[in-house]
Image 1 (tube, one colour):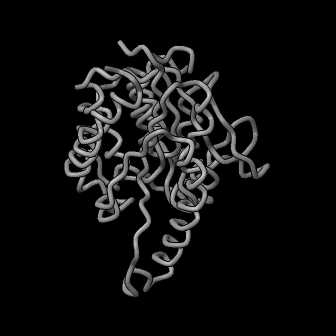
Image 2 (image 1 turned 180 degrees about the vertical axis):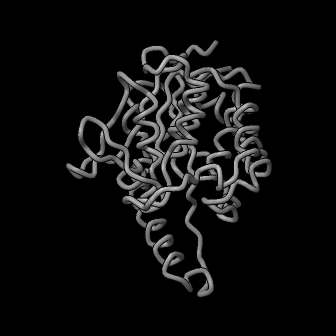
Length: 259
C-alpha cells in the first residue's frame, strides 16, 4: 500500500478516453493505489467507473463493443443531436449506489454550468447525473439539467482539472488526451473540422496552468492520430496508455517515494 497519497487527474478527449483505461491497467499491475481522482468528460466517465470498482479490462470491453449508433435515439434535435441514454444505461449498470460517498475512491467531477457561465465541481450526492453533464459535448450531446440549470462538458472551461485535488494528494499524475500538433490545410477544409480545431486550441490553452500543477504528465503525441469521435481504435489506444504509463513507473516510484 502507498505511504503517500497519489492523485490522478483524467482529462477529457472523447473516444481517446480509452487511453486512460490503459494507464489504470498499468497502475493496477504495479500495485500503485490511487487515493483520489478528478476527471472531466471522458476522464469523468472512466474515473467514475474506476472509482466504483470497475476494472480497466472491463471498461475496454465496453468501449470496444460500442459504436456511434448506440447513442442515437429517434427524436427531434434539442440543443444537441444525441441524448445520453446509452451512457446512462452503462453508468446505472456499474455504479450500483448512485452517491459519491459510496465510491471506493474519492472522486471529483467537473461540468460547465451554462446558465451561470462557471465551472462546477461535483463530489457529493448523485454521481451519474454530473458525469453525464461532464460528458455532454456541445452540439453533439444534449445538455443535462441539474437543479434547474443547464450543464455541458467540463472541458469547455477546464479540460484537465488538476487544481481541484492538488491539495489533497502528495503526488499528482495528470493524463492528457489533447496533445497539440500541427495540421495541414486538408484538416480544416470543412466547417466542422475548423470548429473542432478551434475547440482543440481553446482546450489546450485552458490546460496549460493545470498541467503545471501536476508532478507528472502522461501523454503521447500518438494520441493525436486517433479520432475523438470514433472507438474503432480502442485496443490500440488502450495499449498506448498502458505503455505510456509503464515507461514512467520508475519515475513515479522515485518521485512519489513509493520504493
